[in-house]
Image 1 (cartoon, rainbow, N blue to C red):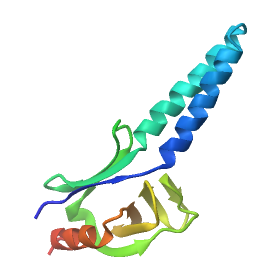
Image 2: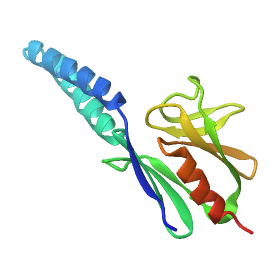
Image 3: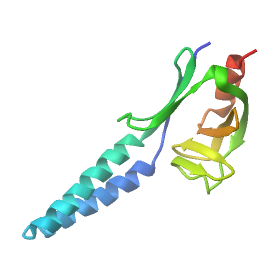
Length: 147
């Protein structure tokens, strides 16, 4: 069995709205080069970050699970199946947020939208992988657990 699932998020739209605001402000301050280039630089960064967090793809890479934000794949992680001790369907809390976060006592969270996730125990580390397909991801990972 293989697993490949992409979830779409909507948080990137907020970043693109901010980018548009910065771009317009750069045009307004076009006679002040420092302000103009600062606004346009922030706009460019917001567009790139927004594009980097538009989707979350979770897929089987034979020996490991690849968790990758995209479509510009700048951020993500890989979890080796042999290192996984347990998996369970879970829910993130508002404190875990969306994106990539480490919360003391809760571990790492990779989430693009919503609160459904699969909690993966890797040694003493907890990794929460957000998904809109938690049951299938959990079943897939249970089949890949070391015997």
